[in-house]
Image (tube, rainbow, N blue to C red; front, side, top):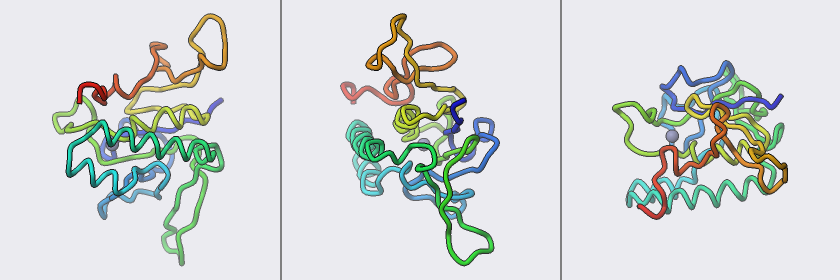
Length: 182
Ligand SMILES: [Zn+2]
C-alpha cells in the first residue's frame, strides 16, 4: 500500500487526513503553523511575492515546477527523506521528522467550489511530484495515483491519474488556467 498524503486548505477540514497537519506555505501567518512545516512543499518566497505583485500565474506555476523538479531529482519527496520540522511544545529546539501516512499538507487557500476561492493553489502543482515519489495523494478530497492507464504497460506511459475516474491528472485542468490562456 502506498502511504496517503492529504493536500488541502487549512480550513478545509473535511479534506484533511487522520494524521498531523503540516504547513506547506512560504509565508504562514501566526495561526497557520499547524503541527509542523514542510519547507520543500512550500513555494519559494520570492516566487510567491512575484505572483502576488504581478498576478502572472503561468510564470508562478513554471517557477514552482522548476523548484519541485529539482527536489524530485534529489529524492527529497521519497518516503523517509520527505521531512517536516516539528516544534516540540515544550521543547528546546525544533526537531525533524519524516512525513508519514495520513499526514496533511495544508496551505491557506479556499476550496474550488467555495465562494471564497480566489486563485489556483500551489498544492495542485505539487501533487504530481508527490504522486511520482510514491505517495497516494488526496488533493482537496480527490485521490490521485501513479499508474499506467494504458492497456499495454510501459514505464513511459505511467502517469498521475484520478483514482475515481482514471483520467490523467493535470493541474491545468484542475484549478490552474492553461499557460496559453494566461
Ligand atoms: Zn493553496
